[in-house]
Image (cartoon, rainbow, N blue to C red):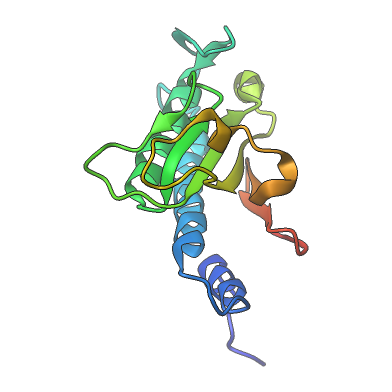
Length: 182
């Protein structure tokens, strides 16, 4: 019997080793997304026990009424990923336009677009909800500001796309174009 245990972080590092010129930035970003998903999952699982169900009293950029967990998940994603040093900008379904990385944080070459809690209208009826994310490389020069050109790239330029489903168990599924891992 083998004592080898494949963890998510071990898998991500193992995949990185397939690319000799990898810097570790993508590995770090994917690990940060996984960690944030664990934090969101914890809140989702205790939603019925604490006052985090129901509407937040705000609307997102599309005019949809935000749930308390929407707001929590969005803040968790923004705070965690901004600090990572791997991103130059983010975009969220909950925010209008790009979300810049604070000036005092290190910046990287990736952009992460996400819906922090897709299906949030299902929260109160206990149907599955999840996080959707997409990662792109920056296309504008690093010494310039991030623009819409960086955010509005065609799907075939994605470095990674994935989702996390929260419920009685939580699963992260992603692809970098060479199969699906989950």
